[in-house]
Image (tube, rainbow, N blue to C red; front, top):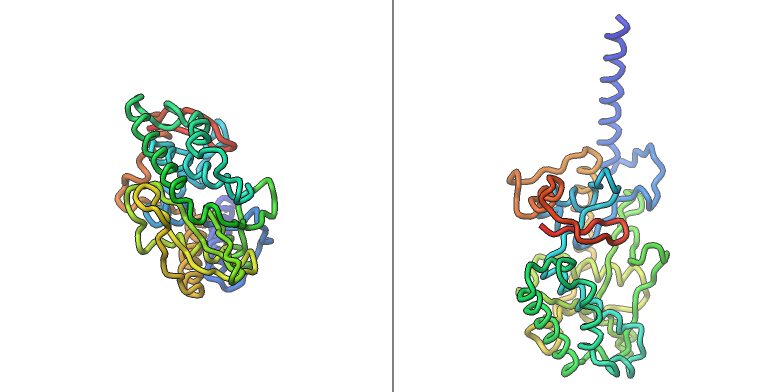
Length: 310
């Protein structure tokens, strides 16, 4: 009889827990836990992108931790490594006075920074592959030096509330404990209107998906973390374009609702521990599964992330 009773109580508590969780995640303001930024649902352009492509990939990238190191998994490849270094070189200029930014050739800074990703550290499989990628990045920076445009104008940055977490963020929904974070590549100051021009550097060969929420997220960050208006927004395709390509400023109310809708789905998935691949093993989650199954090679550590090549 005691065993039956214990089983009944266990099942009842599980059912109640599920009901309470469902109430909370349906935004009925039922709350049994204090909301803080430490237990919040954090979303960004990259995490949203992973979740939309494959919830399992999202889990393996942003939630799963190696039980031996307690670190998350980061997979490096040549295209990603190239983008990281070119961005690092350009973004470092924003804290230098405008008139002094190009005193040191960007290619010289680039060559020193490249040492961080040379060889397997950047996912390169051969010296020939690495030299081709390095040459591509050099040409991008030579293009910027010849056509600096906004790079030699005054730039501003978003405030950082805590040096231990060097990304701008704000509560997209405080009642639902959802936080939006992101790093904007460049914000050119437009003095005539006391406004800003948001620029995102692109190092890939393809143009950004028109359905991407990246600029929506950047606009929301700028709107909520500083007082200046948004003058315009642009992608700068560094491999092919001498100037940033201006895009349409989105309706931010619509953008907020789109992002909140995805964030709520992420929050429910985390609460229910449900992260299923739509095809039971797609190109997005498969590399992470290969790492977990011992088919990757660890090539470095960055903070609380173990870096692998597959």
